[in-house]
Image (tube, rainbow, N blue to C red; front, side):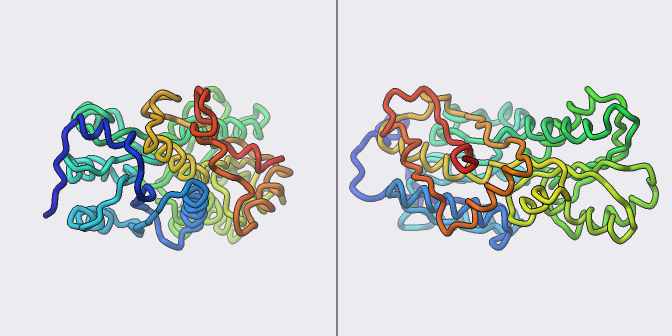
Length: 353
């Protein structure tokens, strides 16, 4: 197995060195290659790479952590390793990826979900024991769970109500954080009772089967909170078959969920994190040019991309996302073009105007 041994001094110097070739990035995508969220997410990463003159390669894990780790090991044996490897901590694969790439020249960056507090207590955080783990960028998942939960329980107008929640894959930080946000919102709404929180594994069919079995047992459930859009649609299908009228909160940006929000079939929607990967490309581009993102918001950043989207904004966002390429030049967010920038300001606001 080929390993590229480097010291801390080399790791510190490399980003500032002149680039004789485009910066190369590999993203280990934990999702399915045809999963709408990840399809869009990666499309915007490619848009950013094009704007910034970078090379991006994506390896799809297909929701199989074993497959993802196999790809990581193959990269170790490659004669042309990437400059940067972007990974997620879905199903808690982050520590193993860090172990595999320890003492190599490849700089590691956690995206979308990073190591949780317990994991970091054991192996350290970025730029600690693993010097080539340079940082992380995650969305405001807990806040998004709170915002969607608060807006959903407000639909009860202070009257007693029962709520059923659908989280994602159990060992996924984003699913955990979104559910914690919902629980914070419920703590402020004593009139709403959480009947059960289920792990729908992000899948429409799984949530459909769970809802088909549970809804008949709980005739007073009126509120459905879902950590993504696919699970919400699974519950909606089950409710329609059972003749139940429910109120829904969901997250994501698929054409279907944006239309459902515009039409009022989804009552509460949070969106915006589909730009997260593109924002990470900007940060890595700057780092490679010697402009450390740690000086512009910290080495580990939580970006408030997820926000509530009303019906009109959902229509506008759907229209903008239908375009073959977003009308956004991602280089505008780079510190190369904004040398006095204190923090990165990547956001979906330009798409809602």
